[in-house]
Length: 116
Length: 113
Image (cartoon, rainbow over all chains, first blue to last red):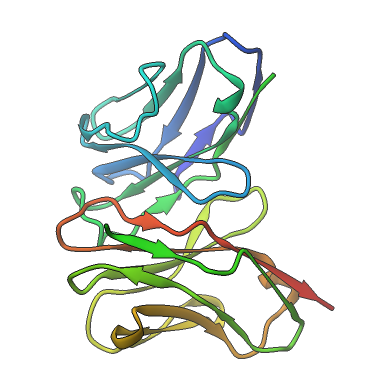
């Protein structure tokens, strides 16, 4: 597609349930990033993929969070046993080159997760 | 530690007035610097970026930013604000040794008619 897409756009779930968030990067983009944006806050880095490997998982807040990527395409972010503090907008971005902070990141519209 | 700071949480301007959003960075080497805009319910869109060379950078939508090493700043400016510019603005930075840019916490721009 023309841009980064994410699904679902909104997700409401009950505490303790698992959720899966999907990101489709721009075709040909090698690098993919997940961020979390809590209400009124900046972006919190979660994980970065280079191809289908994740050199940096340091931002994942707990072992309830995991992510995978198929080749250089779709990525899924899974949150197990969701907690209310997981409520946030989850943003995905992709960039053409392989992991350099100088690369322009192209962002998707985000998934707004609400945990009741 | 490398960081990007946006001192202003909210900025309110009248339509047609000039705008300056502040961004300060803390990097040892010459940083890469970006400004992004996020409209309600949207992802972030790149306005402009600085890597090296000319310290005055032109971006989209009539925005510009100036890299000032002496002040460790990369402030975003626009001479005349339009109501459609109301949004959240994020400054981000990185350096040659990092692959993940650091984002500021954002400045919310409110435009009065």
